[in-house]
Length: 352
Image (cartoon, rainbow, N blue to C red):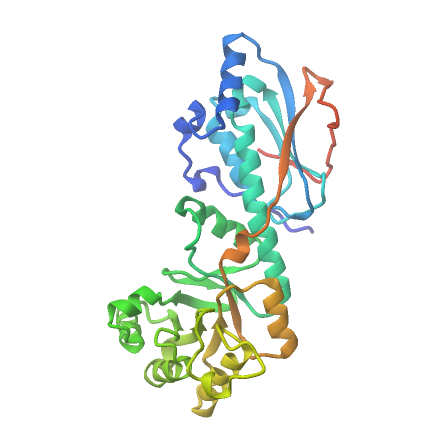
């Protein structure tokens, strides 16, 4: 039997229903168009078709459905058909249709386009990173370079693409124990003493939880990794190499020449791996981060560098991904602007 797919409950997105209905978050022209229809007493029955401009891995469908469900006065008056988050999509493929009175949801269509565009970009990027690193895990690091309101939805979109979250709260998957990333700022709060910060973390986390510890605070990743391993080996899942692209780690300085020495490079990974193995800490894993892209992952993998996991951030939101929304039927008859047409998609299912 095919796997039964489920959609997320719209309530899980915690959307502000009253503000959505008023059009507070809509593009001003869309809310204005809705108001014109209402004021003019015109309530046309339409089909609005949402189509992808590119091929990729779909994200944001459940969130777009939630926007519609929470943003209309009477959800039962709409008929929605849609694909599922995680579906492969082709360019120009229909991913969702909404049938209903246009004055009820005209203000929401551009919002759905924005949701689909953002989340599908993240999901598609996440899958490309995961496929490059397979079978090694790709972990999403805490977001620092984007608006905080986007973090929650992006985290879900990246998980659809196959990544696991690595943050300040314990995260786990079917193949990993609960993990917490120790932030550099916490190390700073303990006067730059990474071991002291780790001890404090472990004193206040459940016994099952394992830590991922950054070891670049003093720009001496080998020494810090060994210090952490010697004192807290049983609770450390791995060390994070996150040396700035503007710095050269101390272990690299004696062998500089013939390669780019800055940041996290293959020589640094080998230095840390060899040092840990030499003292019997072979179970401690190495997570590399810092401008990790599909290209960099492939380079590490092709060279056989002993990386156990990759930490990604801005790579998840790079590039662009577009959708369009068009009225394609009007009062039961085919009707669309030039260049647009109704494109039925048998893969879509009715949203109940």
